[in-house]
Image (cartoon, rainbow, N blue to C red; front, top):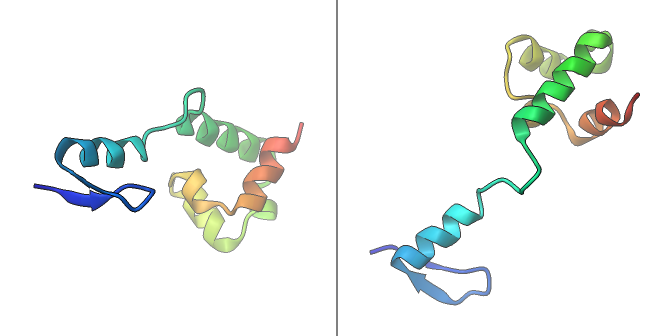
Length: 83
């Protein structure tokens, strides 16, 4: 039997605990990480990725890693805000 604690520190077991754990990893409605990754790649393709990204970020971009994980928050915000 699984035993854990919910966000309020109360004990929970079994199915309720599993549902709580699973719900904490479900995407927010209207938010698709793949769409954001595609938008970041499109914007990087339109600009010089080498000028915008650190060496580590550029390596991740060039090896098709998940950009939401590889880029820092400031870089993501800058790319998504640009028009």
